[in-house]
Image: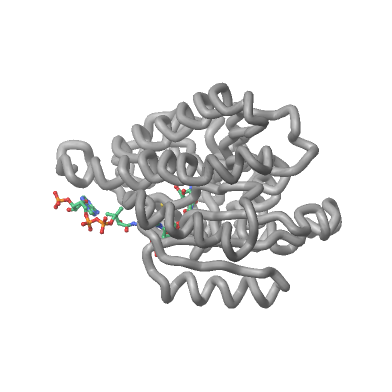
Length: 270
Ligand code: COA
Ligand code: NAP
């Protein structure tokens, strides 16, 4: 079953979807899902080379693409990319805040700058993107999809920086849902579970047999695929979700229902 078996391939025809961190992994998967449903796609990230590669993949799906490097921590650079995308593709209908940083580190081994780096990329970067996109989203009565994580609501070992950052992202999402409802702007989060063949999984699940061990611990019995998250993002941005705002939609095969015990076991080797 593919996305276009469920949704019309013209669902987002003429719409501009901007994805921060869209050059790789889950975020590129989200961008591809929107492209398959007819959207024009803008992506940013720090590496222009990576963005150019991703843009090629998106164009191969038939999408019109704008790709400009910007660090989400640098408001001026991000605003320039977001305004550039408006010039190329028209006003944005959907913003996906996916840029993030993660590495496993015990809190006592984490420097203040290490903690700050993740807060700045995930939380400040998400605010920066939403703030710079606001004029366009107000014009289109658009929506925002934040890419969160289970660390936002369940404490995980060696993830104090990520938990604080993603909990902040989800609260920002809810605050914007309230503040910007009067402009017709919706705001929601998607929480991916362990997604196969992604940088996040490579960084967090290398120990003790790696991803095969993780898959065995997922209640639905498999790792997720980037398309699983792309489908959720497309749903949240679609008219089907027009009465949904301020929601965290968890797409994880049931993983987070079990708390962080499996991660504890994998990370600590117990
Ligand atoms: N353990 C502990 N501290 C770490 C670390 C690790 N594995 N990796 C980086 N840090 C610390 C650095 O030591 C530095 O702190 P210091 O100045 O006190 O020494 C701080 O984090 C910033 O490191 P730097 O490499 O300068 O940051 P950056 O802005 O270039 O990169 C990161 C940001 C660290 C998040 C990097 O991992 C990254 O670019 N990640 C993007 C991709 C990613 O994480 N994907 C996974 C899914 S979200
Ligand atoms: P990824 O491929 O590393 O995605 C992160 C993207 O963000 C990269 O394209 C990276 O590109 C970009 N980025 C990083 N720092 C940036 C910055 N300062 N400014 C602009 N762009 C930046 O990792 P992923 O695993 O697919 O993760 C994608 C999202 O899913 C993240 O929000 C993550 O927290 C979330 N998530 C992942 C999993 C999982 O299983 N993988 C589970 C739960 C949640 P550059 O390096 O070129 O900048």
